[in-house]
Length: 622
Ligand SMILES: [Zn+2]
Ligand SMILES: [Zn+2]
Image (cartoon, rainbow, N blue to C red; front, side, top):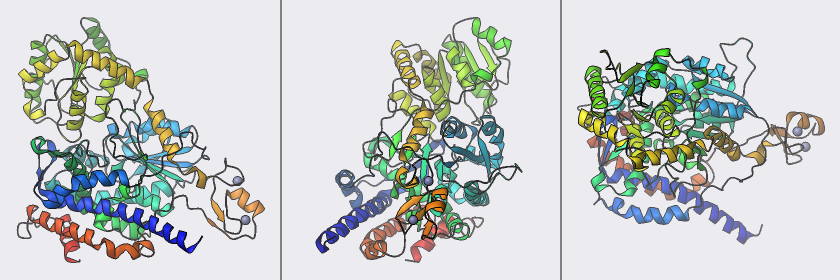
């Protein structure tokens, strides 16, 4: 390489590198500077208020537009991928039953070609093993976790400022336990099955709340693929599902910022636990607060979202490393034996409206039940009403209502003419899949997002947030489900959703993004390369390495180099240049802190390593 072309090369690499780093840091800095306050909004969401006059904020929109097109995105994966050898894949999922269920069909597809282990909470062992998959127990008490998930509005991530201060410290031990177990899930045999085979992951598939994913991938130098049911990647198209931004003054770029702000809050809340996990368990360097918030983005980790393009199109600023699949149906209908009374009820008249609020806890179940019964009556509709955790239907139901306990959605929904539910991703998917007009009554979290999406798609009326639910609104919504436009749109959408298999698309997306070139043995691409022969410059499987390369210098293979944050080399060279971005962010956080509570009123029970102190320490240490 000539001196000149070498310089050109370094210059290109440095520019590309710097732009990426600066983009993420400057955007976060601008977000925090433009933010005038974060408060707990309704439904446990984060209310974010922005100051439109703030200079960095005012300038960022065109800047963002210019740069997102300029910055080279990750290369698109080949449409017709090279085959990868058979791998050991760990699928890590933290969350409720509904969060875990879509991963089962995906894991089964992957298991056709690979050894697949699903690592999730203990109480889902039976569900995983009955699907013919290997299991590994992740840490944390699942019931405490479910309770916490309900409290945080459907997510294991803290979604409310007060939870960040109060609940997160209380749950920190559990989060540390989950982190520890993610490493064992990648490297150890199932501890509860004595005859279990040893396991070492060659690739990780994970949902974002499983925390340990990217750090384990970094320690093992293996690829990571994220899968999730709700948007987790910054976009101008819609705000973070846990954020509310006043629609009256909403600029699209605020939506973009809301992702960075949620990331920063989460990183502030658990960053020290993550650092302890990295340094003590994995032997990796700690990450800075701002870097920790952006690891998935900065590394352009491939991401597959489980909804169809026809419902929520892929935003233009998402690179080729992000793909949409489809909703994933977890089939249960075949094993279901309906009670005769239910069959009689269904046969006795017009198809009913399904009403159920899943696992959410209602404040006044009796009042909620009366509202549902009266609205069904006024709309002249029959209803199948799920008791659920909301304990609906304490009183005897009227003749137009049938009360059910557990009933698989894929059995029941095709026998209904409309559905009314809380808007959880899984239930929303099941209702739309069956082609039904959908009324969403969001309680918290991403349910508001799905309510919006369904109404915008024309497959249902405007969502009715639980605090606005009354007989009048609900009757009108039930009536709307008879409108031909809504019914036609729901039918069309159902046909579209049924035309593609979400689990198959997601599994193919995972395989397509694997770095096949570096995972195949040079002698035979069907073998998994495990060593690199320095003498010959070849990647080799164990057998080929042993046979033809004995006496050569070999070292273990690294499939992915996650070392973008090494303290030496390019990063150190450019560190000075990035100081201004860090300063901007620091200034932004300093402005943010007063609105989050001062030293004086900090609750004494907040733990000493809590987020406020962490933020302060981070600021004062600069
Ligand atoms: Zn060799
Ligand atoms: Zn080989």
